Length: 252
Image (tube, rainbow, N blue to C red; front, side):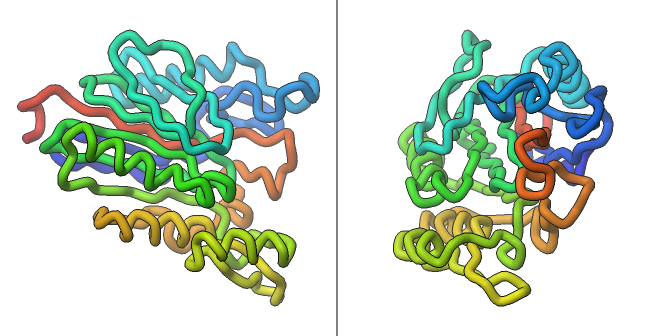
């Protein structure tokens, strides 16, 4: 189920793999997204009731009653989640100060990010694909956490498509590199590519955030332990990253 699991003070987090769930076929098995290609028919969507069970499995593993997941749209909007938030907000970053509430970000080649400041008791998750990188969703999330009182933010960057595999047209590579130069890359076969993860890390470091690259050396396109849109096409599931803030005093 977990590629990596860790903690920092009262913050617990994990990055998932695709095993340990109940989904079948291309979505086997811990798929965390019901509709991965809206409007394209059932063959491109998992059974929502099974996805709900998968999320329940993840919630149980973290001993939380509820997980909030976003309706991710490759944008830069950041939402603050309070105890009343139960539906999926339209955003690509979430922040909360609520204890025992799981925040979930989903990805299949995009870059998942967990943010935390245990002292300020703020946590967050970010979904950063190529578009989100250019729009600055990671920077927006960090700055919103700081606006709410965070001063020492830690970031964990998860498994994603690597810069040696994520081939794009030359014009697209140029456009992204014009905004985030660190994202420019070349495939192992010599064509233009992007390294979104490296770009995300550069943006985090530019904001003086301490970064741990959990996904270093892993590529979701190459490794079948993960879902991959590039490898599987539209009928692919989503792994994720979850973060939970425990009540004050639990692990301080």
